[in-house]
Amino acid sequence: MSKTKKLDIFNLFYSGAAVVILIGVIAKLLEWPLQDLLITGGLAIEAVVFGVSAIKFVEVKKDTEVATEATLSKVADGLEGIASGAKMNASSLGIGNGSGTDAYINIQTGNGDYSNAQSLNNGEKNISIDINNPNITANNGSHSLWQLEQMDILSIAKDLFFQPTWDRLSSEEYTRLSLLFKRIFDKKLPNKEALPFLLQFPIKLPVPELNKLVLEKPHSIDLNDIELLCNAFSMINFNSFFENLIIEGESDSLQIRPKSQGEIQIFGGEDEAVISHVNNYYNKKLIVCPNIEFLESSIKLKGQSLLEYLIQKIDIKNENELNSLVSLIQPYSDELKKKLWTKFKKIKFNYETSDGYSYLKLLVQSAISFSNIYSGAQLLKELLEITINENKSIGLEDVVNYNAEIIYFGQKNEYSVNLNELFVNGELENLGFIHLIIEKLVADNVAAKYNLLQVFNLNEQESKKEVFDKLNYHLTKTNTSPSGAQLAFVLLYKQYQNS
Image (cartoon, rainbow, N blue to C red; front, side):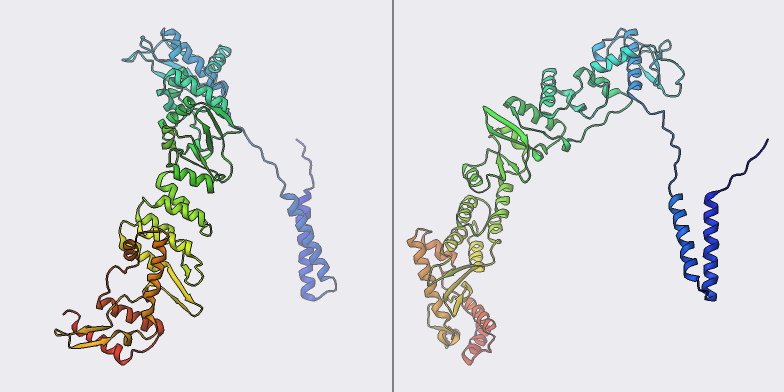
């Protein structure tokens, strides 16, 4: 046998370029004139060779043992043969009460051997499937294709929507659901008669991802269809129905449509005041669904969670929106009201110009509505800042509510300190400003005077302890050392605080 020799071009380039590089290295060491040219040329040839050799083709063998549509057709053909041999009801697709035999089915051909079959206790057949014998030829492929086509599973296509749990629906409900899915989602449901077959099918069909169920365009829909959808989705514990869909309109003209970016569905059974607030300030973002009871469980944004959303999204510069929201949350918990007022760092009221008075009224109204009036008073104390003039701003911590001019200590009141000597920076005048503000609030029917005195913490005269605390607060605020009278008060208070 003769052999021919063939020049290996790649080897020639590899080796030749390597020789040039080696000579270039020698030239570099000996400092020959062409040292740079030799090294550069050798590296360039190597780069071209590596680039060309990167292109390589490999042989890929296709797996011929994957079950195809033809395979499914043959399996169905074999199952049909079992059903007819055992005189089973064809509409049940292999499930019945007659006596039958074990069936041997080749998954490649669909042909079966039923001679050795044995009946189970309930009359069903024991079906075994052979996937290792492709040598038997199919003899009834066309009929099995017809059978799978009738069951709507001829091809496991993208438009097939298979949910085994929906077998619990009645035939009428399932038929309506099939028509509804095809019309609005363009998805096919297998025939209800095919579900028992699919549940026992040796090859498990994939259950589709429900969160990818979307609409392409709006569709009209009636109340019964919505109820059927809600019932069907609740059976499979799918509670995110409205993450991609919107239902709107009146009960006699309902529409289901795709959700636009940023839209959120809310329940139409909320209080009228809440719906009115949403329509006034969030009509493009929050879409109110019809007031249909069975829709409520499918909607996440409702009740207190809706109010929390409105608090989170409020524009605090919009006084009308704030006024509306304060009214909405008055019947709710103190914690919910606090969440609203945490949107503010301070609420400033100018005593001379009345700027900020509208915010002051809302804050006072909200604080008075607290179940725990102390919590409301504390909220007002933390947020309210009053500007008296260009040089003076005060908070409620700066107000001294001690009407007597002299504070006595001792069992027989033998020791005393003058209040004017304790507060020397005009702190005693602040009480008058607060009383004038309260009178203005009473005149505007914001609240009764008794409630206002409570929330401003002025309904009772302060104790010696509260005077002591405010003295320390002012010393810290002004960063000053205590005077003789202030130091005497501190010592007397500590000596007689328990008396």
